[in-house]
Image 1 (cartoon, helix red, strand yellow):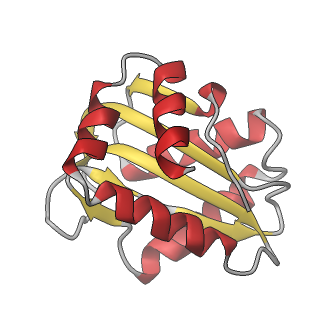
Image 2: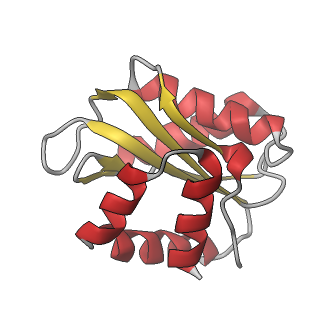
Length: 149
C-alpha cells in the first residue's frame, strides 16, 4: 500500500483547542477529499484506538490512526497546529504536529507498515526539523512523500 500525502490533506497553523477537535477536523478533511464516508464512525474508530494507549509519539508529534468500514480508501493526513494541545504523550509534552492514518477494514497490516515507517522517520531530528520548516502545504507534502518513498 502506497499512501502519499497530498496538499489538500495538510493544514498548517490550524487553530484547534483539543485533541478531539484535531481528530474531528482531520477526519472531516478526509471526508471532504473522498477518503471517508461516515465522519462520526471514523472518529469513533480513531478515539477507540486512542483509548487503548496514547498515539502521542513525543517531540510534539502524535500519530492517531484508525481502521473502519467507513474509510473508502487509505489516507495519510497532516496538521501543524498554531498552539500545542495536550495528547497524553509518552514524553508528557503537548503536541503541535499530527499525522493521521486512516484505512478501510480488511486493510490487513498495511497501515502498521506505514505507521512503522513514519515512526522510524520521526526518530530522526532532521526529519522533524524538515516538518517544522515547511512553509506551505505543497512543500510539506513533497518533503513527506520524498522521505517515505
